[in-house]
Each structure stands twice: as C-alpha cells, then as structure tokens.
Image (tube, rainbow, N blue to C red):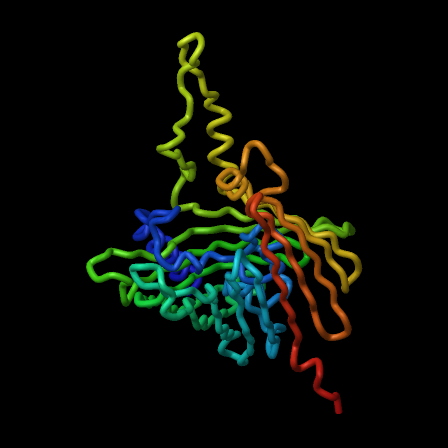
Length: 350
C-alpha cells in the first residue's frame, strides 16, 4: 500500500510541474551541478548505480542504504575561472526507521572588484551560494527503496539575495543477484521563498530523471545510462542570431531534414552514457559522454573532447579517493576531487 501511494505521489507531483522550463529560465541552476567526482566522470547524470556510495545519494536519496551508516564524504570542484564548489556529508542508519543523510554545500563565485560610475575601484565583494541537504530513505522490500531530499538554499550575489526550499523524491529498484539497478527521480520540487528582484516569477530547475546500471556477470565492466529532462521532449535550442539554413543559397531549393535524424538527435539529448572498468575491489576507471552538453557547447571548427568526461577511483586502506575531469568546452575542463571513508571501519574491534 505504501509503495502504491508513494509511486502515485511521484507522478502527481511530476505532472503538476510539467510546464517547467530549462535552459536559462530558472534560478538556482547550481542545483544541477554534478557534485561528486564519480558522477562527474560518468557524464554528470548517473543516478542508477546502487553500490553503497554516499556521493551518489546526494543526488538520488533512494540510493541511501544501511551499509552507508557512519560514512563521511568530502568533495571539491575546481570549476571555471575562480569558481569553486563542494560539499561535506554523512549518513547514519536508524533501525526500524531508515537511513538518514546530511550534506552542507557551498559555491564560491570568487572575489570581485567594486567600482564607481567612473571606473575607480572602491572596494571588493564576494558572491556565493550555500545549502543544506537532508536526505532519508526506507527500504520497502528486498528490491525497492524510496527516498527523499529536503534542500534549503541561500544565494548572495552582492546586493541581491535569494533563498529557496526544494525537495527530491526518488525510487530505486535493485536486483543484486543480476547486478541491475534502476531509479526514477523528481528533482527540485519547491519554490523560491525570496526573489532576487521583487516582482520576478523565478522558478527552480525542476527535472524528471531516470537512471539504469548493469554489470554483466563475470565481467569487470559496469554500464550506466542516465535519462535527463524527461518532462520535456524537445531539448534543442535554436540561436536567433544563427538560425538553421533551410534554403540552399545556390539552387534556391529547400533543404530537406531527415525526420529520422531529427528524432535521433532529440532522443540522444536525453541520454548520458557512462562506463566503469572495475579492477579488483580497489581500483575503477570511468568514462562518460553527455550528448546534450556536446551539442550545446561544441565549437564546430575544433570539436575535441567536448561532452566527454573521465576519472578514476582508488581505495587506499580504508579511504576511497576519486577524481574526475569533464570537458565542457574548448575553453576548459572541470576537475573534481572526492574523499570518502566509513567511520565505523576505524573502530577497534573488541
């Protein structure tokens, strides 16, 4: 009964938000930044892997598990220019209640010079965003887990300030014997409680998302697939300053666009592909491909590795170290570092 109520609630809340927009029409888009090195390495949207990693649970609370209890995690991202962000988080399991998590997040946009109308420097100021993410999960049966995040966000951009409250709802269906896991999420349901500018109707970056992971038996590979922005089919963007060419400038004939190619392009924009090579229990090598990121940020004359991401994880004794490098644009890449440890593993056994 509880399962049916929760699933119904997910779809009702999702349907209520179907009018949400993407691509520059939302406030607090920092909620969509990949926080952990593992997620960044797998393309930025990997919510289906269920293997006891707390760093994936900040995005998908249904991945919280009992064996994450006393797990601690710290992450740092060297973004573009002077922007830095990261989090510190922990999880704890309470018998007969469920598993809880708490994350503190921070984004530092750097230090800026303040000038007067004549251009004279009169001081400096900083800008940033801060948040608290409280998560909870409960296992319904041996395969199904439900979870939720409650998030509080504060943004300080010089003289302009804003705050918001948001929630994530999630399901995870895990079949350990088959090495298969699937998740469905509704993210950033909520409202902006304080607008940057009074009178503006600012919205949160609402999203419906799904994720799948599978590891073939007796093979050291894990494949993952993330499906993003499921609330909106067409994610393409047409630049008004550079519209597509519909007429051949020489012949004057109309340029035919393949319907199959158009359909494939729209479908691929929802997909984020990831893979891991598992070398024993201590080392993993990761790679991801985000088609939407590549299409939006690609420079045609120098395509390079835009949209691709890479990384690795290594366990040294009782500490897990992860690193990722994601190529967003020809102008540069991001670097993410994550450290995880389980406090209970350091206790001396009597």
